[in-house]
Image 1: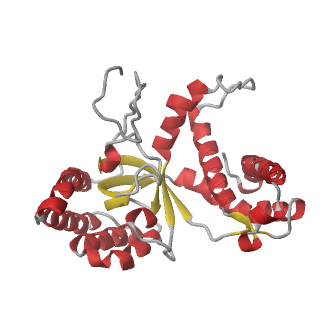
Image 2: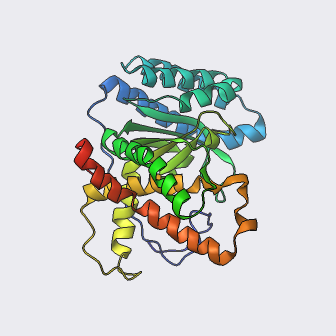
Length: 317
């Protein structure tokens, strides 16, 4: 796409041209027509709320409150379309939050602590990427749990203690892992509001992205299909630029598993620190770089460990 733009954002910096790719997101066959209709209504209302919010803030209009009341009713109705207890509970809690924003601090961590098996959703004010957008904007998204890729993520979690022991034995016994957050792997199929106005995000950090800091329950919702799409549309074609000379990159379905394994391993790597956070005082920049290289190399072997583990568990990466 080429042309002059009258404004730019951190997501769309000034440039003479842009390369834009689109992906098809089919509607899931597993949801009832009634559920799909309610989700369609919710995305339309969330889109409207994203435009109403700035106006309501300036004028004091109650129109946004009316929209959220309708969204609350939709969530209550949508909960009746599912059998999974956590899916229903998440929608009921979301409905309560939409009808009474004062409950958000209490109820959002409860949603983050659930393990929905039929539908995962987020509706309301969310921040995007720290450093790009520190404000919250109105959004809604819906996704299906991806059980196959969730198994990959969970297996990386299972292998993490062994990786931490390796780091302690080979680098420093004072290495410890800070408390992390769970991963919920989903395939996005509906999105609206601010989240739909930029290149698709591949993860949200809940409930922090919804404004609740230091929650006892934390969860990262990963959009596996949009994450894979970023890889296929951009990274795969860019592989020759950094000098990739090895064997051909695996086909897409296998890459999806490797990407989630890397994503989770990378995130767990961030949790590894020295006791009392004395890393900078105790090590020179040279040692920091050396140890960082060892850490990344070790975590990079997580995928190899998964492949080895499949011989024991019958797991196929």
